[in-house]
Length: 390
Image 1 (tube, rainbow, N blue to C red):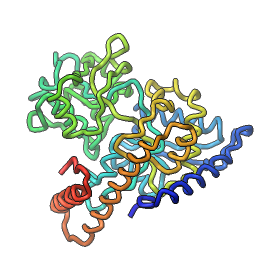
Image 2 (cartoon, rainbow, N blue to C red):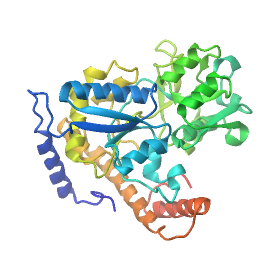
Image 3 (cartoon, helix red, strand yellow):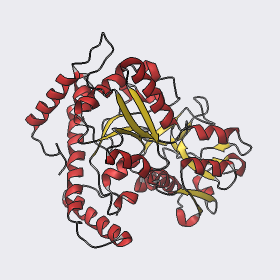
Image 4 (cartoon, helix red, strand yellow):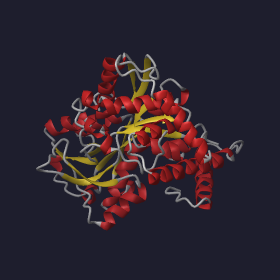
């Protein structure tokens, strides 16, 4: 059972008060935080991506303001970003939507050496970009349906990219069976592939560094829309990617406020920890990101998304108690947010109990995955939750 999952309300309040008391020890005049360790390590996306760039900019702020040395460990896929967090080699991960997949124990995380993880959000970036599927501009493609028969990348060990791609293909009424699936070992390799004419599409946030390379290449870039008034399109998207939110993107390669992209998005990057992450450190990070936001907001086009007023507290992954304590103090955390968070933590507890029943099953590989996904769905439905994936 996850720590804190079923604490009574009074115990949670005491826990939050304790975290606040520790956070209050920040020495504002000296620019020193007793809660932040002198050295930290985060995992993040590869060098050149917006997630990595934002993590580096935050690291500079932490160094300048608090004397904290932040080491960024790049990971080419979702598994390689989360494994160091689980193993304790990094304190946090500047991750993508794989944080949600791992908390659910689905896709690559449905294996017997993974399972659902008690992940917690610290803070997220919600910028003016979209999470979208780019196509090479030299193809004349204007809708997702036009990708039928085209070469579409599949990145090994990266469900955040693959499921996002599949969800947007579904907007056009097609799936993997309707395209030529080309496998790549990582995010950067996928983008090299579209620039080098090995594939015809690639998934990314619209402000990611490699998208600019495609825009500047002879192929050019175009982002097919996911029209907000197209109910069939959004039913397809949400069937595979319930974490997508309709959004007008105004920042990125080939788009602007004058030429926006009508599509969808979700927070990225997600500063992710575990339920056992030190609440004092989590709270101190939230304070540092909020109080010194101006130090890094212009370092990357997506960094504006860390602003306090852009935080989305009712999404699909719960927030850490240390973060909640600070958000409450800042007056931005509501009782509705708390009820939503409690439900997400209870969902994780249901998944953890279901996972415990898989111990000693003797099953391997696909047989294990099939048995787990069936048991997962049964447990969630019995508790009144939507399994989403089966």
